[in-house]
Image 1 (cartoon, rainbow, N blue to C red):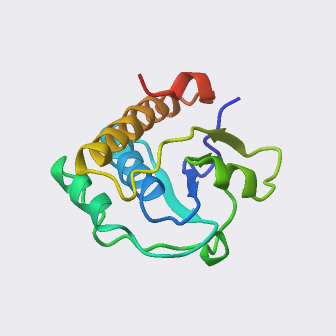
Image 2 (image 1 turned 90 degrees about the horizontal axis):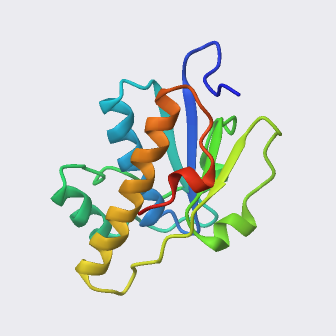
Image 3 (image 1 turned 45 degrees about the horizontal axis):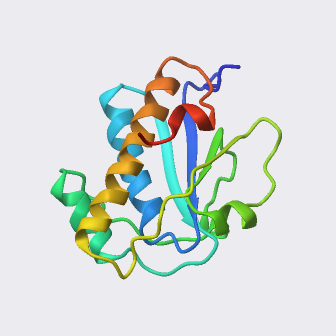
Length: 155
């Protein structure tokens, strides 16, 4: 089933618990790859709780040329528009707490390890895994196809 509606704008939400690291990195990656594929998309991230964007997330994304320094942590309730074509949860807690979306919303889940409190090398490892999944997802979406979880798992 094609996901892109009549307005030719795909709407993607990435959810995690605190919207401080994994979901922020995924938002950055997805925007990066959507631009590279000329895919018109609104990409947002949110959490089940609001905190702040962790400095290490900003640092490791900047290393690869993606600036998330202006991102803000927010909750689902903070979003003005909850009409998404795809909701991607990137941690188990967010997957379990994720609100119910209409049947037309494609829900995907990949649990990435939380790098909080770990070395920068672990942050880079998680960043790269999220990047692999993000690239695969956008490549599928650019063909106006529906991604399946198995198709976007990191290598």
